[in-house]
Image (cartoon, rainbow, N blue to C red; front, side):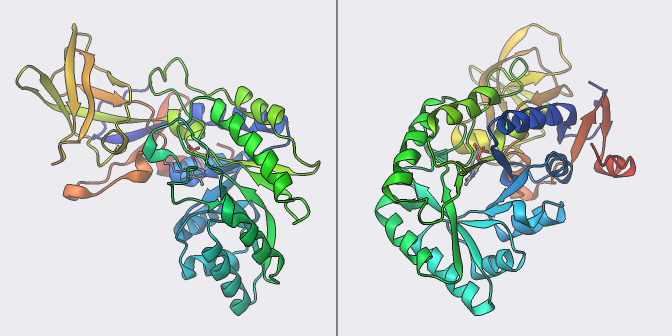
Length: 394
Ligand code: LLP
């Protein structure tokens, strides 16, 4: 890695070589079965990262009007954009209709009626996939499970027939298929196998083919290795897509799509932060970094654990609680972390911060926002450098 000790901390550092390798592999493994991937831009909406992904032919998966707008600005073609979310506003719906995005992933009967009404008033045709809540346990953290009855997401099975009827009786709505997303950071393939079985039976029970359903969007959620990212930087996309190929049985011609976020970008980012103090507590020592939960909320929000390394010390191993400077007791990156003896000024890296770190920043405590740098071919570049180099084919 190039020398980064002179750069003001904290900052995000993205490994573009790893990103390209990851996205190309995901794309080629999906391509074996004719599957298509939309990038869940909520994971990281950085312009360089998003453009690299767009250049590799992926579409965009959005959950707000601004994400739709931003994806268009980044050059994602409207016909590759899908748009989910349980609380789309009238303005957001209008925007997506007027930009002629590929489809809404519609989350309720009530929303479907509003989309139909707005399309009628403004003279648009709305393509709609119905997001179904399949009541499947995703075996992940409770806060990032989305496909259970208790979750707000999707249309539950008792209401699906009504939603299909609304579509078939509407001149403004074109039903394109079904959408599912059962959760995030799913590290076992078993929930996905159960999802395939559920999808197969829903397709038959609700006669999706006869209703005009030709798209099956299975969402995202494929997890990454937070424990050992250095040795496991790219998720096993081969096994992931092969599982769907093995277990889905759908009418010929059904297009299968995914919305991957974390698995594409999670391992390519890290937070680089400096030690402000090593503070002695009672029975423990704290390493206080200049990055905090404002740059990485995951540990305080979901008890997530990220690998933390000291990039500058070679001292003897010691145990520390690594904490940020923010005025919250949950501003803790890791408890009892073993690091080489750490001192003020040392550089700490928090790994696996490519997804849901930079896109979930807070400005609580009026903290400055952390900039991003990009590592490519052993050099550290800024966004301006990258534009200057005109790396179109990045
Ligand atoms: N599709 C839909 C409808 C989603 O809600 C999500 C993520 C994705 C796709 C992409 O999921 P992925 O492949 O990235 O797992 N902030 C949390 C994760 C929230 C995920 C929200 N939805 C975290 O840091 O773990």
